[in-house]
Amino acid sequence: MLEKAIFVQSRRYWAWVLALLVVIGAAFATWYWQYSVGLTITGMSRDVSWGFYIAQFTFLVGVAASAVMLVLPYYLHNYKVFGRITILGEFLAVAAVTMCMLFIVTDLGRPDRGLNVMLHPTPNSVLFWDFVVLSGYLLLNILVGWVVLTAERKEVAPPKWIKPFIYLSIPWAVSIHTVTAFLYAGLPGRGYWLTAIMAARFLSSAFAAGPAFLVILCLVLRKLTRFDAGKEAIQTLGTIVTYAIMLNVFFFFLEVFTVGYSQIPEHLDHFKYLFFGLHGHDAYVPWMWSSFILAFAAIGALLSRKARRREGVLALGCGLVFVATWIDKGLGMIAGGFTPNPLHEVYEYVPTPPELLISLGVWAMGLLILTVLYRIAVSVKREVEA
Image (cartoon, rainbow, N blue to C red; front, side):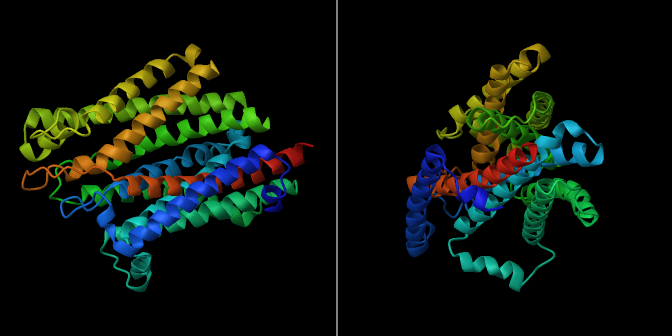
């Protein structure tokens, strides 16, 4: 089926692919510079050992996990409305997990060190289990997506042997973001992350950001390729996004109450730094307030079912959700956890231009994978319908 993404008579398609390749090439050259001189070209330091790369990894794990919001209703509850869109969610998970792994590689500095996870496994490490769940989830989505799409192309039912893998992918999707949350919640010296609700916050933001991005993708596909995922399917995703972002905001206020009422400095100072600044350092204050405002604006746009049924409003609301959750998890989550340090000293982290360019290249690689997979999926569905 790969020929459907290669032999394409569309200038717009190849212009988009070429633009992504240019960005990837520039990012690879920058990464090679980082590989040669070390992570000193980044904004990371002794006090902030995880930066923009790991922040993007954290956010994209949630985007990948969100595929379960399609797989579960369609395969477990026979919700046929998602019939045309489930494969899009699975392929989005493939692209997102690939980006997650690439961000880990860029953060390592030396990619060969990543082999130590396999050559010298340490089951008592949460990092080891994060590698297991991520690689397993990637393989599951590639297998399930490709087998189901092949069966659809042949106009036959998917083979029975694939069903256990489909059912396994449902709890596995939850596990990838739960284990990622445990990476943070298991660090006793970091008050911002040391909370039992961290995994719940991660999952709620995942089930908001992922489906929101998928709604936008479906609307773009309809405009560019005339592939219609179905109005009811898109509206159902919009409903999922609405309640997920409301739950995410609710979980955030639970944290605010616990930290604000207890007045424990180890927890409170992180919130002060992010939202009001601390000791004269306030680089993330406008970003975090923007995330807060955008989240409420998204709820206001999506809460009314009548307004949500207007696709312009739905697209706007989903865009606000995606940006709000990206700022919260893809920017503030890491910086806020490391600042201030356990000694209550502030060493402010700001990503450098090389970091941003390398990260942009990883995003471009993910979009390239997504473009190819979606081109195949749309072509197969058109072929079957014809």
